[in-house]
Amino acid sequence: MKNKYIKFSSEKSKYLILGLLVLTMASGAVWLKYYSPYGPNPLRSSADEEPLKHWPYSTSPAVITLLDSSSNYWGKHLALAMKNWEKNEYIKINAVEGLPAKECEQMPELIHFCTVNDPNFFIAFGSYVSWTRTGHIIAGSFILNDYYLNNPDSPYGTSIWRNKLLCSNLGWSMGLDFRYYQDENSTTCMEALWVTERVPNPQGPDEVDLAQVKERYSSHADDTSSSSLSSITAAANLHLKQREYGDLVRSFGESQSVYKLDLGNGYEMTTIVQEKPFDLNTK
Image 1 (cartoon, rainbow, N blue to C red):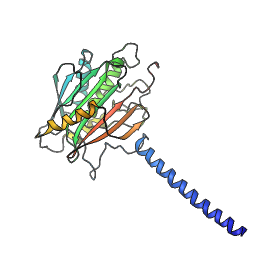
Image 2: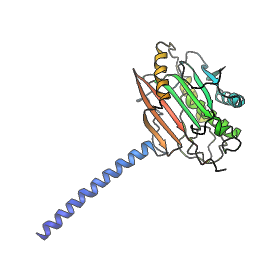
Image 3: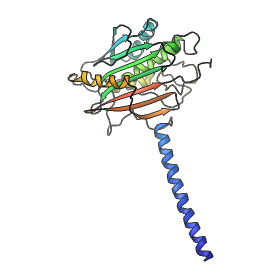
Image 4: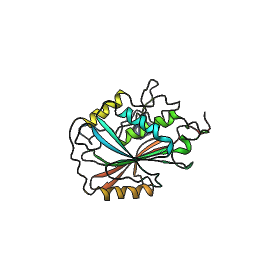
């Protein structure tokens, strides 16, 4: 009886350890996918998965329209960001001046750039709608917060931070990915905010970013027809107004989170929420 009891306990312990191991591995997989800086990037696709996100184009360079509804602080920063992204001549950003917008609504076939002045809003926020079958982006918008970025009492109220965030959000709105890993020698504005716990000296795209532009905007010609886009963007705007962003697909603490929402008929909305990467009182 004593030997049988010992054998039973040993067998039970074996299965208990095995169960704990499986649970640990499953938890590790979830952390790697959603929270690790070294996990797979859900916005980066292979040939066997979703195509790379990009605006449809039929000419070279690809022309991307940007409606500028920002405050008066941003003119020179936008000019610099456009110049930097156009370096390899595969894209041309056509900026159209707009009026300050109370609601930064998405509109078919353009990126809408807006600003707010609100201590209760994110430091930066972006969203775009794409067709999953082709990767075509059909509408996009991003918002930068003047309360932090044009405030002399804020550690973010500098031209360096304005250049970095405008560059990165413009790049993201064109379908590029953020860099979700730490690199002290980084020369890109596309570092994710959680990485940037220092002054973001890289204020423009680097060679890797420009190679991604070439990959997205030089390989083929697209059908640029725009039937029924208004109803899709209207649905997206309604979800944005109600702060319905969909499923979380990537997060780094409270600094940067990416969501995806199924809009139906093969369309999805991808949204990025960017909080302050460190405390406002940290200089």
